[in-house]
Amino acid sequence: MAIKLLDSEWRLVELSGTAVPKGLDSVARFTSDGKVKGSGGCNRFSGAYSLKGDTIKIGPLISTRRACPKPTTDLDLRFFRAIGSAVKADRKSAELSLLDSIGKVVARCDQTDANYTSLMGGAVWLQFVPRRTIFE
Image 1 (tube, helix red, strand yellow):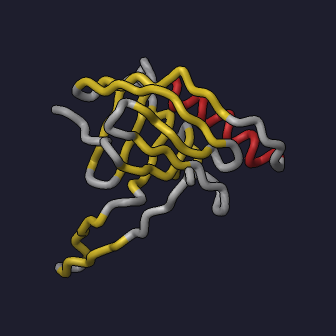
Image 2: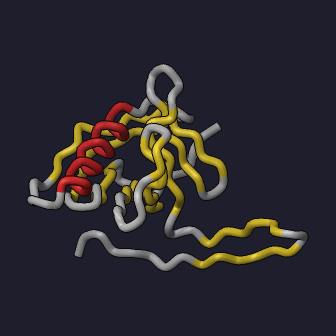
């Protein structure tokens, strides 16, 4: 089954099984021209990606080299390495997991530009998440 990522933005929520600390935002946007762009929290990045079924290849990536506080810079590097090592994408509704060659989840992301529904206590709740512009 084909995974749909085109023109969608994803915020990193977990990196190699560890929750991303509050206030550190890493996002990626997959565009219809085969590009992935985003921010690791400090540095912006871009590169190519291909997706066939659930097989994904991301990279090579290029990034800026801004000086930022250590926790943010560390997250940047770990995020870039993780998405570059992904070989499989698994999407469930507004959640995307990227897996490495041994099937380990290296990054888990939530879609930030989705209007989606969820069932809670028998009621349907709509959550509207505004779009964020990374590049101007």
